[in-house]
Every structure is written in C-alpha cells, then in structure tokens.
Image (cartoon, rainbow, N blue to C red; front, side, top):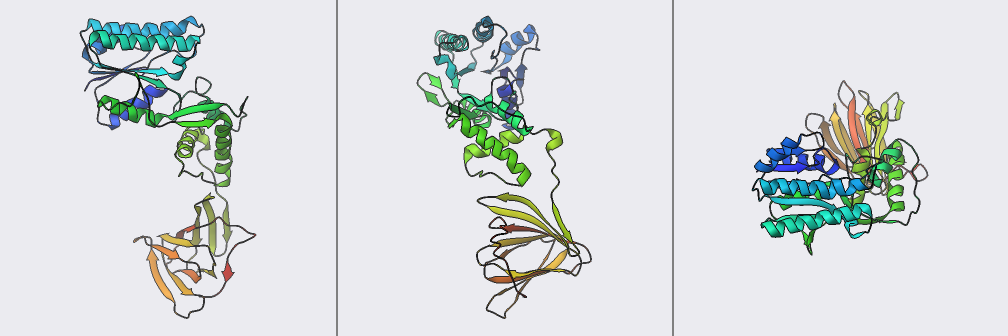
Length: 369
C-alpha cells in the first residue's frame, strides 16, 4: 500500500513513519514544509491511504491557525478530488476543537470539511480528536508540557507549575501510532462521529512534575520507578529520551578491598536491588545468612562454587557455576551461603536481592558454611 503522511517530520509523523515501516509498509510518501507543491500533486495521485497530520500549533499570528489547519486541509482534499483518488483519509484533530479559541475553531473547521468531503465523495474518513500527547521526539517549549518538563528536569533546570491540580488527559505516542496502524486495517475506535485512541491517562500537572523529578533523583540514586504501572513506564521512557547524550553514562561507586569489589547497579522500592560482585582468584565471599532477604546469584565470568546449608543442618549443597554455562542459583532465607572463585581470573557475579540494602536492618548474620 502506498501511504501519504503529511507533517511527516513532526512529532506524530516521525513516530508514525517508523511504526509503519516496522509493520512492513515501505511505500511511504513523506510530505512536510520542505517539500515542493508538485510533490503533493504526485503523492495525492498515487497514494492509497492518507495520514493527514500536518497543522499549525504555535503561529506568530492567530490568522495562521485557519490557514494552516483548515486551509491546507482544503488544499489536500481538493488535490485528492482532482486526482480522482478516493483513498481513505485519517485526519489528526484535537480535543480543543470543542473550545472557542482560534486554534480550536480552526480544528473544528478542518473536521467539518473532512467529514463533508467524505459524505459528498463517498470516501471513508477518520477524524481523530486527540488529547495532549507525550513521548519521544516531541519538541520542548512548543506544544507539549510533558516535553518541556522532561527537557528541563533532565538538565536539572526549573519548571513552572502554576496550578498542580490542573487536570490533563494524556495519550502516549506509541498508543497513538498503534491505533493509526489499526485504522489502516479498517479497525478504528469510534466515539460518535469522531475516532479516539482507546488508551489515555487522566492525571494532574503536579503528579507529572513529581514523577519526573523522581526520575531525575532516581538516576543519581540508582532507583528504578515502578514500571508495573503503565503510565509510569511510558512517562519514564519519555523522560529518558530527553536526557542529554553526555548524561547517558553514570560512573558507579565500587566498594573495593583486597578480595575484589562490590557495586550496586540498580535499586527499586518494590523489586529489590541488583549488584555486581567481583572476587579475586581463590577468594571466598559470603559466609552469612538472612532471615527474610532472598537472593539470586548469576556468575557471568570465571568459574566457582556456591555452597549452601540450612543454619541448623550439616548438609552442604554445592553448585558449580561458570560464565560459559549461565546458571541462576536461588539463595533462600535461612541458608548459610558463600561463593568461592575456583578460576585463575576474576569471578564476576550478578546478584539480585529481594530488598534494598538497609544498614539499619541489614538482615545479614555471619556464619561459616
């Protein structure tokens, strides 16, 4: 299928073009402000589906709203009509079309024009009234408060929250693209005469700001957010996409002694923590047990043996492990355990613990295996 995407270089367009390619669509006509008018003529003659995403959000003069939103839509539909092309047309509108402001009026006019075009020409049209969007590649300081907050907070800069109780309805860009791909297949989600993205989140501005600042602090403290919550997972992914490239890498604190080193990697309030333990040749680490804390050991380089016994038993279980045959070993509570490096190089072990380390309640009791 030959697909025309207007506004292809914008936030939604850029994400959608990649989503289409990943779904196997390769004949994509990308149209934006840098294209020639003759490109639009040719695209409209050849295309078999139209994603009309182009529009004006922040003009210098309010009159540009009507020209950029209604005017260009009229031009696009007229070009399709003159080419005798009855391709289905999907139009990106906004929930602001229900508001009496210059932007909303231009979007409402665009919607009415599209629906009329469909009725008069027997063309299937999909008009999507979208709420505020968030996700990677949105332009900060433009038309996305989430993009602006992410950009500033990722750089440790301040943000302005006039009213933390301001209510927002947000759609994640990947959910928008997934719905648009379904529309391509004729599986649109309708709500009356308009189409909608079925997944959205109603939040407050204060909640968004608080979460984003927690992501900023969490990167310094090795804390992971609770990504079992879909909105938190999507907002965290969005936030990371705004971190400056020179801030991707973060040197970790290595606790080094004659035996090797121990380094915390990531921690989570609800999933425990992951650390990396490096033991020198011949070194035995551990020789302790826990009442409640559970662990998993995974040797990824070198070879060694993990020994366990119940605190009130003399029977020792041994598990020989090495980086060539990755084996995860559970360390249940109530088991004394240690790990010995049997190789002539460093033994590298990834350790997961079921809780973050608390020096006030370490739940770690020395005892020889």
